[in-house]
Length: 451
Image (spheres, rainbow, N blue to C red):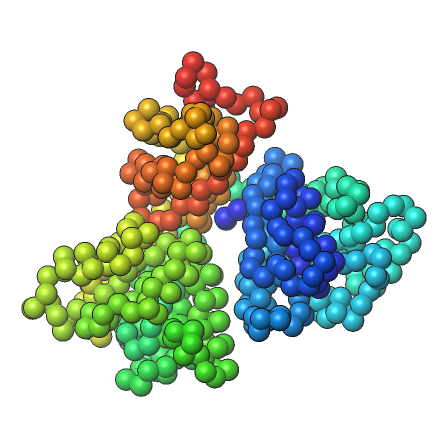
């Protein structure tokens, strides 16, 4: 239900970053003849025939990175492909099909989302016959040239046809099954909670750290509603990952976070917060997942420590996640577990909420009147209007005179305003800034935002 992602993949040096910049309408990704320049995912919000989509550039598939980052690059590519709603498989018309192109095609063969074959560097109609060699991959083919600006309209049409239909303004009244990922470092009681939820020994529980090595889904019921708990392996520091089992356990745990609706971030009440906890919270935050901090084994400290002390400790440690609620539980006995799950369902509903454009703009107007954005290059930047374009996470686009003029501090201020005034008080909000186009008639009227 979030903004659908259009992910660009292919072997190195086929022009993926050129395609990305071309579709984005400006130079964002680095374009270079040297293989492997793009490593991390690069994203850009674009509009496709009136619908917003997130364009994602990825590193070259199959490249051996000179800095020994091959595994990390491949993981970033897989993360992008897993979240894609449309995949653009880019190939090079001039070179023709290569063995590495065939390997990429095999990797994409079993995807359930649409895959468009984008034959780049088809600079002129005389090269169309060369592009026909790629029909062997059995995909809908679009001949384009980012350099010569050829085929862009056809490609955008093909993308628009394959994007999912925009979500209705109001979510379905029948609430879907909520998936809860239970994450944390080793031996904090994640599997014990799953057993308590399922009221059965569905998970192996052991005092030996690292017993759970895969992510396991356990369905259970509460108050007549079905939920799915995802038990995940305990996280380790990156430099401590020494075996293939550790590597794939971490990878699967991260994947479980990405497919979860709500994340329960576990802490051991008897242990200090460590680097692993911080890395894990950073990952949850990067995925924009609703998160609840869960302090487990509270029965061991309830007589000697007030909850306020742990609350202050968590807030001081995770300054960027002050919105996350905190629960104190004892997983072994089930104390406070039901209240924690009820609050989790509240987070789920918040992530599914959609506000009207009029109400959102009234909040923006009030925020601007109370605290206008600071000067940028001796000019007052303007915010014209806002609209919510997606749910899970709630995604807001602000149209302004210059996105660079709206500082990160002011963006954080607006996010606090949205949390205080809208039904997004305890969930992450994704905020995009876009420059208003000249043909956009939505504008300020007598100093007030049009809704």
